[in-house]
Image (cartoon, helix red, strand yellow):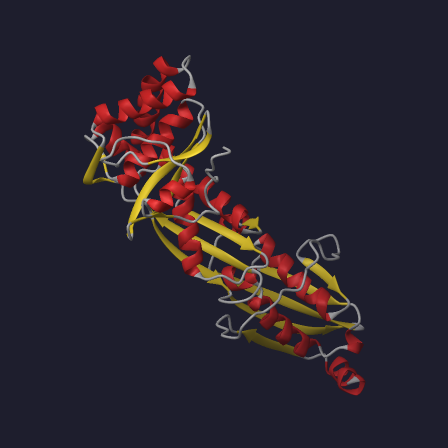
Length: 358
């Protein structure tokens, strides 16, 4: 190896090569990369002593969105620089950030006095703004929280760098639904979510979620503002009442607006302005008004007698209780066991427990 490198130094040759971005290998782990490699004053000219520092340097350039950069090898006599560049280029494009943001990397290796220098050219498939907008998230709650934040502002794109992650697209789709139902203030039509993962497997990935809403941003914002004003108007007369009387007043207000309509719309806007809504719409409206009144209330996305169905879990003076405003038997507040006996099923991990003890 030393003889080969000495020969290369004497010849002062220039080597050029490229690395394809289309890699199909599984990626099962990610090596931690340093944030700022050593440089010579110019942040696009980086000094490296080892293969890992080379990988770090390439990741650093991608993080910055740099299209050009220079990498100076301080110990060129101990390494086959071209081979290192080939391998580092492949590894970087298997890294989540590289898989997401980079289209192609080209480089030229030039011998200089006592060492080598690589000029790097990076072609991106993403903008600098998209790369800068990536949010780190670990765990289901953090992912759902970021999705909820995006839905609350009608954002059309969410990109997350997720660690310890081995789930698939369907898992993210379900979290989008959960996040949507947790935001009754902006639940104005379930957006279509297109999910892509970079790379396709591994414990750390970048997950891109593209959201397409059923209405324009202008319409969504107008309906959100209308709902907020209506919720304030309906709840204002109830503010000084007990929790029990507040709940009674909210239920009456929803009934007066149209109540449950089989086959009706599925949003709280439908429940308040369009003459009623289906189980999802009425449950979202119930959550909206309860929160306006300072009462904890969530939407339960479950089943009743084998059919998809929504209802609420609300905090009463006796503790958390289920309430289904679509019930023909009248409004009643039930514990978990009673709901199960009535044919309701749900994911108990997603809603507060409703027990006799409260």
